[in-house]
Length: 316
Image 1 (cartoon, rainbow, N blue to C red):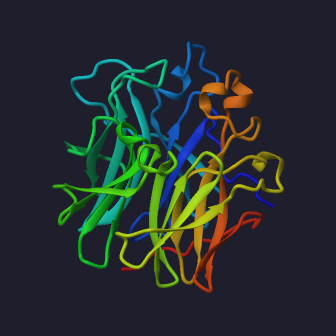
Image 2 (image 1 turned 180 degrees about the vertical axis):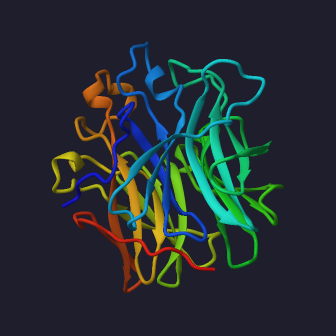
């Protein structure tokens, strides 16, 4: 079955999950956007004003316990309630890095409000230090994904809403200073399809990127993490569980030995329309699920109805 592994116990709107092993322990931590499913307000206010939630697992991801929300992520110059989306959290160069999508305030509509990606670091996944706002291709960027590539450079992929909702990419040698590298996956302005939520990982000797096309996850394959070839869609067919009957949205991937766990969210009580169509708490609620990835004959395969998955902790 594809039953949920987690639901936010406060606001019932867990979305955009990322899962990371806490170094030196068997603990797995999930960071996620906390959408306010029951919020009474105009337009898409409920999607904004969102903190970043944390859940923890000490049994390889079989069960998750709510740990509260992350403190200290607001810009000091922004009083009041602000918006935090889609954290990317990685361990690299002796510390944890978070690349957070940040919007000042709680807008009630999509257009006209700058979105930026902000870099934080932490020694322990608990206390975070704000480092910088990344200088990317526009002022309307969200959904960071970061990976170390075979050429020795770190790459950061992100959704550029200012350029047809394409996936832009920047490069860095140290995770602090970034240089624009153009477009990785075209959006609606360049002959492609608008999308969001890129995630990049290595499996089966290939680099893979998944992006959320709001009809399932599009899959792209690469030999060098620079030039990408489209494979098709995964998670566009509903799962068996009643809480998993819609397309999978904004996912993260945790690579294991010969396979990978894909963690995604879904809106179990609504159709495939985007969030502006969701006008009741029931339609807005969202839950987190697992799927299992493998590579067979150079093709990324996804099994949605997998039941429990067990993650093995990383050892340095």
